[in-house]
Length: 323
Ligand SMILES: C[S@@+](CC[C@H](N)C(=O)[O-])C[C@H]1O[C@@H](n2cnc3c(N)ncnc32)[C@H](O)[C@@H]1O
Image (tube, rainbow, N blue to C red; front, side, top):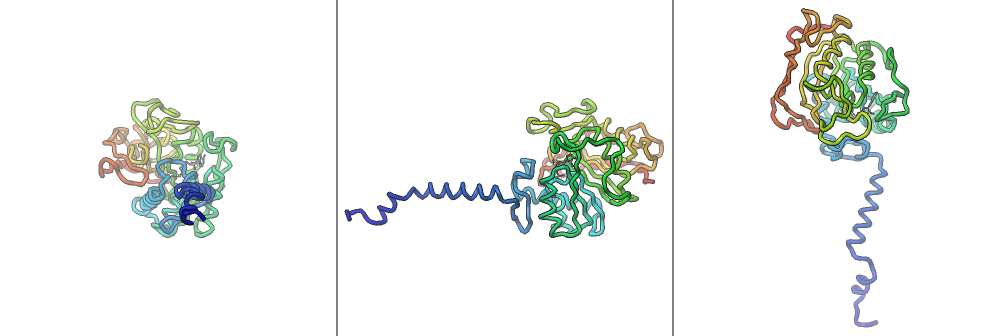
């Protein structure tokens, strides 16, 4: 053997350490890519590519937004283990995951048109938490389920009447056609229990056309694909809600992720006659002025208020009690 040491020969003939490290990293990443879940801080989370929203790719951010959603259920809506919650457009179970951490359990039903999301929730949430049920809706959404069945007026969810204390619809009407939103809201009235409430988010602004699909420069990213962002004129949205038989209990302008507004409804006892925006009945009107634009406070995807801690709560003076 020449003067070359064994160690030097090994160094010369084997690929550099950094190359090995790179290959190992790539291998790991591709294996992780195929994993169908991520274990994080004692919870099972959907893999990043299922989470849709870029702000939720980070595991800590995803989990803290899930917990924040669940805390709202507890603190704002008084949810307890026996509360019956319907989570429409549940995606891969963000709220459900938050509930398991914050409340332990509720009587939860989640549904969505996204088959992969529902299969994931069944496998990773329903199988471990018996009070959580997930259902696939074979309904068409141009963005999320273009091959589904068109919603038609008179559509009813395959769920019993009066069965839910809270219907939660987060970041879903932001990606649905107005016509479909009306059809859902119509059946929500049937699904709500006495004193039940609907909580939903929407893009709602003043001084814009009644409905705009993918408005230019409105959300932080350029819109891409159908129904990326559906924005309502606030007065139009309020009058639609009144027409469908709801009283608006609370309207928090732009406090949610990406500038969505948070809206809370109860059934109006006027049953189909308007209670909103100055077109309603004298004893149940929520004046349009009460919903004028307030100082903007934006909630980040992990649930923090980014500009000010002031929450612009707007409550109806004379709230119509349902039924
Ligand atoms: C932006 S994601 C929000 C998911 C979840 N609510 C969350 O906050 O993490 C919108 C969800 O709405 C669902 N969706 C769209 N149209 C729907 C419809 N007609 N019925 C039920 N879910 C729908 C999509 O499949 C998607 O999972």
